[in-house]
Length: 394
Image 1 (cartoon, rainbow, N blue to C red):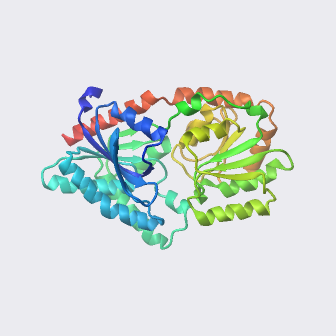
Image 2: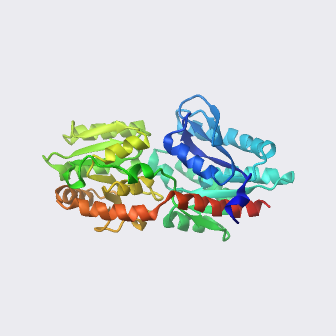
Image 3: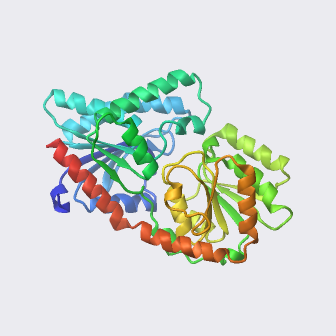
């Protein structure tokens, strides 16, 4: 199916994505590029803040208020989004629903089946951007774990059973989707979106080998292993000039307080900086002043921040999990360490901080990343995926 065949196709994305109004530069570019396929696009997600939003910018956005507690957000999402999605199916002639995880896939499956009862055919695409079995438990403390696990399993299986097309962002998420799907379904694999142009064209303030900053970029949650990084940094940096910058939203406030207390206990006050959430442009600026990016998560899909850092020429140290080994060759384009292994991480950090030829690793990483991802490949991936979904809707 050619790109022009998608012209006028109504597609609705549903997921827990958060958007601002106006859109960030990165989000604006993403939806503008997807709009080049000629789609009529609708997006259901969360606003940043407690005020619901509805606006048009390349797509039509319907954003729910971001309630302060995760259980409240789940309840809000599962009560409101099915009704909103059904309204879009009948009033806006949506033909394809793209659910950004198997859990949202359950909502898409419900909408698909209700629409079918009255003669409307809707195709369902279910995506996976990470380990949907374990990620939520590694992100925050969950009460009634068995009940939660059973409910999540039922939702995911229902969504995947009724999916017409699947999308994975890495080999590991692809294998997980295949294991959970009862019958073989069309499956497309391509990376998640990032405005990599912001990073590939960066002019560094310092050569990698001259910088003395270790950078973490991501939300502050237990799954990301930030506590492991702080402990390893304390052992590796010693009395040298190195600093650790933690860039990202304090998603889990209890965990963030524990990290701040850990910094004090380790005698790192003044050497570890909690930066907070930043834009993509600001993140690129921080990368331009750093020596290495460290991401030692317990699980991931294929984190875009790894590719972003590689594109700036940073040395990347990451855990040997999920899709990360698919893009990092240990000792050649970066370094891989076991998750939760403080000693192994400290040893690699010490090596990178002392290596006078760190630029060589960064240059190899940059060359690989630039050929690995392109905006054209991202749009082409969605073109193929949505063309197959459109055929299913017919």
